Image (cartoon, rainbow, N blue to C red):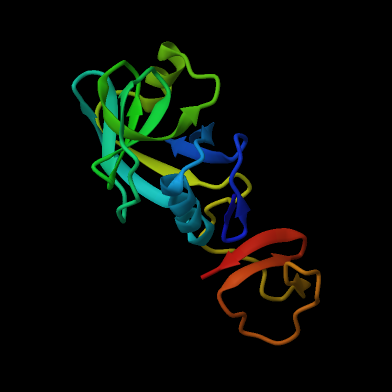
Amino acid sequence: MLCGSFMISAQTKILLTVNNESVTATLADNEATKELLSMLSINPITVRMSDYGGFEKVGPLPQSLLTSNTQITTEAGDIMLYQGNNIVIFYGSNSWSYTRLGRIDNATVENVRKFLGTGNITMTISLPGTSGIEENISDKNVPQTVYDLKGNVIIGRPLRPGIYIIDGIKTIIK
């Protein structure tokens, strides 16, 4: 299925980062994940999460996603949408009505607990291959070769917001 420029498949991945440690997760194929991918194609998402019930971390998303709730018994590593605007990652089990977003790859109770840690955390959700670099600082005296994503050389400055290849490095200009 197409989501903007994204093909949703059983292999669509996202990157979850906590305290400079990252894991990949495979997304489910539903309307909520299409909306999530659309959001991530613009910018990574930062979510402040807290422990709840001794089996999950939960935090608010910047906007609500479409729900397709079903009664689910979760396992460690499951990623769910709760009430349309909360992302939940399980390190234990619970039965409730959720919309499945995906699952942390190769999840075990031990590695999910270690990744999520204890107490409140800040997690960044991004697409693999995006660095989250806010600014590219370089020596202003060194000429830079700038290309767009089609391989065309960009002449003239300043650059408009977008993604460019500058001296061989993918750079996001905001």
